[in-house]
Image 1: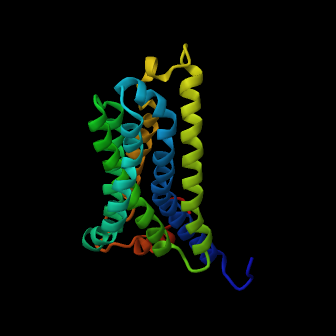
Image 2 (image 1 turned 30 degrees about the horizontal axis):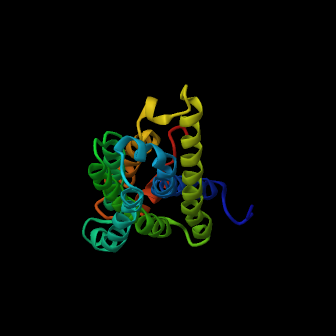
Image 3 (image 1 turned 90 degrees about the vertical axis):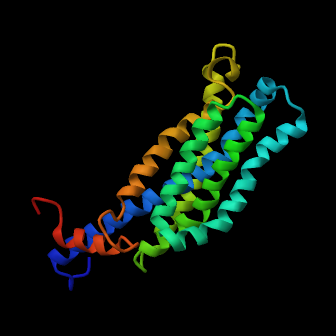
Length: 229
């Protein structure tokens, strides 16, 4: 601890860092969904082929369709954030994840599944560009490396949980066939939960500020402190 820093100033700095950490974690949910969405399809490939009775070529196109949306989303992310801001752009990405999860789980044909996966891919593209930029924008210079690494950690955790959830779906269905119990896109269920959490978390970040950066609010939180301080 630096003896030259007074106790009230140290408390203010800690409150500011906690608030910025909450923002960074909320933004990193985009990275989690990035990893989860790109990996969860692995556990559904066999079930999709069985349910929709498609050729291996059509099945490959369904699996790869999310990458088309990802490329478009990555290209459009900068344009969108310039017009509505990074925070609101990430809310759009969270809504796309949520819509894609519900639509994919309820898809009645391979075509509709591909459409919903392209929509989810747009969210992946947005998240891959916007989340790291947003975290870098709100991070103090001496903490930026650690906070920006949350995005990479969230991607890896998302991939791990996607594969773990795929395994659990097969393991806990009575006949070890996920089609019979949860449908071809049962692994998308977690997307619905996390997508909803991301929407609410990102809507709350910086709420009430006229600007697009939450840093002014972080300063107000640091100065005010929690009640009872």
